[in-house]
Image (cartoon, rainbow, N blue to C red):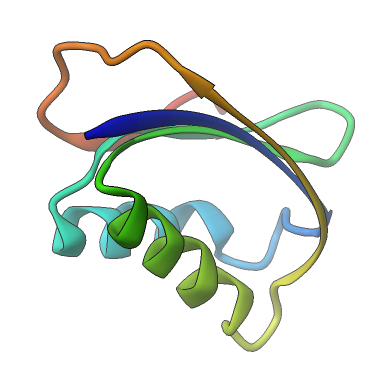
Length: 89
């Protein structure tokens, strides 16, 4: 199990990014959260296996209107969290 903090850049707001993130992450059994940031990027903390996290990111990148042009990724400490949800506005 690992936990990652990811900032997504590109066309990631107003295109269903958070909706798809929550739906797919729950399907994959991942924990964490996702939220829009005021600069137009999307922030995510996601916890699970490396393979499942990679599967989530690949799924998001393949969605019709989402265009990920960059990501800042770092591993962070695990948290006692069981669900994946949307944060913020």
